Length: 452
Ligand code: G6P
Image (cartoon, rainbow, N blue to C red; front, side, top):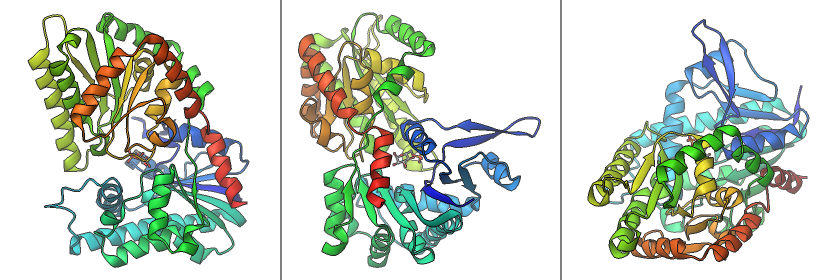
């Protein structure tokens, strides 16, 4: 049956496991966006989510025609998928939008790049064709993120009757980084995105960067939808028994000391190394905190197919170990690194943290900065990078820092640890209100309305 509301995203709401007996079982995916989008889609009867098969088990499900209502997975050739996802989306596009290049060496646009680009085009076409097949007349289509930047243009050619939105969850690159791209690639990206009737971003800053690269007429379709948190849902999740258990464990480990928490994928743009350097400087410049604070750093592996990510992950562990060797004592370990993606543990950390360190060099939004104030028990001072999308909404009540300025970050951590309890609680309340202003369901419906 043709759908009237469709979402296209690389990552879907579920994935499959292949059991020992050869049968397949479906598992809901984790993460804020997936649960938010799932809740929003559940309110749209007959809505369809189109995503890529990400594993052998997913591809097997497609081949066996196993599926769940409301989800269609695309079986994309694994080599082509690897080239599109790792070779273009997570290398070239992610690095461009986050300004991550090590410029003496990268980027290099050569024949190998062109080969990968052809895969990216084909991978986008697979989504465009599937959307064209599944969409009812005049249906509304919401395309997600930099993985699928060409889809709106491609889909527009196949189905001029559709109403199409594209939403970017990352920043949009400054001109100087876009200008590194070969001209034809840059203009193809703009062509793809501008196939959409509405081009959405989390913040005014990213929307303006995109609009500056477009013609004035095209810039009119750019809009800002700052994704927020569903407060009730998150608080309910944070008070499940398994989270209470983790909280008790963590409290025992920390033994009454103050805590500075961070929770990230081990991602180059999250600036974890400078965060650790700032913590080291705090302990050096303000030795009164030695033995009285613990840095809970959750940094779980991500995109390990890429060597720079493997190297970065190793560098994070190494620096944390150095800090522990330098300052640690018999009964105090200054940094506790957790590399497991454990949502229950993260929620326990959110509940107990005195200070949150959110210092990405650039970040589309950063939902951690919004989630922590919502579930914090006694109030949490948020040290927030000016490069995070969340800065636009949280700047008033966060302690804001230039993410490259390690000394300023160390001083902000000191100020956050020293903040009077009452002030911290007041600020946390206001941060939580700003964070829940546009929960996922409202965020999604605002975009649908913009297409009406
Ligand atoms: C960013 C992107 C998302 C992506 C997520 C995790 O937040 O904007 O689209 O899903 O990172 O990355 P992954 O490559 O694991 O999906």
